[in-house]
Image 1: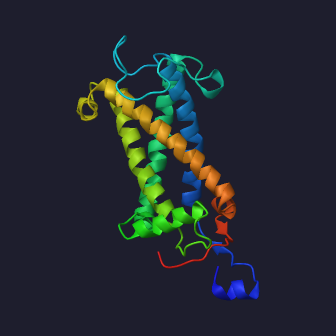
Image 2: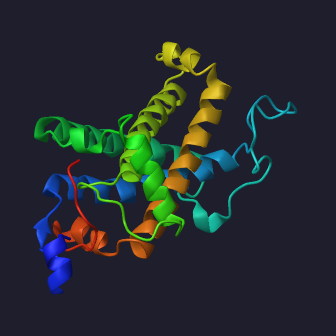
Image 3: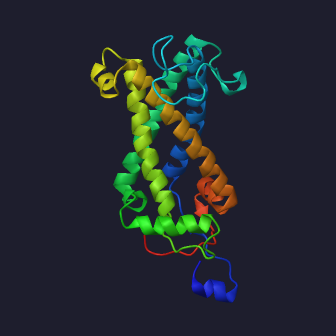
Length: 233
């Protein structure tokens, strides 16, 4: 929103914000991730512990010894969940690669990458979210906290895929399994990544509806009419 539009009471301009590739990969990712989490919970329920049977857990796990409620799982049983989980792995990887290629080719990766100069901007945005700053800090297409979140989620996605591959083929891809500290540790870090993804999704959805509902329409249609001021990215 520009100063002129604010002073005149005019609505902010309608701008094209998201390319169709971004929208497609976003929604495909949403569906595939939810299904992978559900099948993953079914797989975890077959042995809800990290480490050898009877040993202490390899790391913090509030769900140790407890299976997820059936309504949160998919696949029906262990073999069914495994088959569906590994099938969904391929659309997840291909979808992620399509998104990354688009970011690099279009140059949009520069607007999403979190840089050191974004640290003070992220602090100001956090103050705004906490209601400790009245006015919304100027931003480009994405604010500094969004850049931090999206940069982190790309790294998290890579960790998830690599740890998942090490569990899928622990012998053939033994170097990956060893990189994570062995099969049991690879399983644990894969589990941690899933819960970080779940936390990100919940926070992302909450902020969309609480802070910027117009962004949901933008991710569906590509067009955005927001109320936040803009500055150079």
